[in-house]
Image (spheres, rainbow, N blue to C red):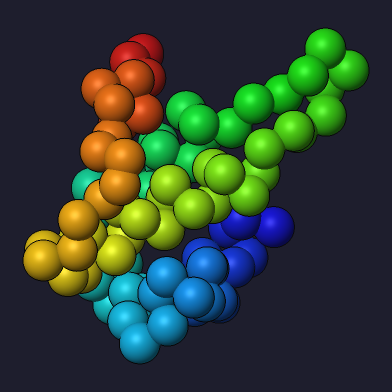
Length: 89
């Protein structure tokens, strides 16, 4: 669902209400890659393979998008290094 909301322009409507983030993210690959990095790094899955915090992961990704599109927006709490760390090969 996350990718659907992201591509549809309806990810976290309250936080991103007046921001059309899609052109900014789709212009270059790195911003979109960071959105998915944050989402998947924050996402937690229980021992049964069920996602237990999709909403939290969506909010953190939306905060990054908001800051990317509006540098005056302050992410609270600030991102931790593990949230933005890209997985290597």
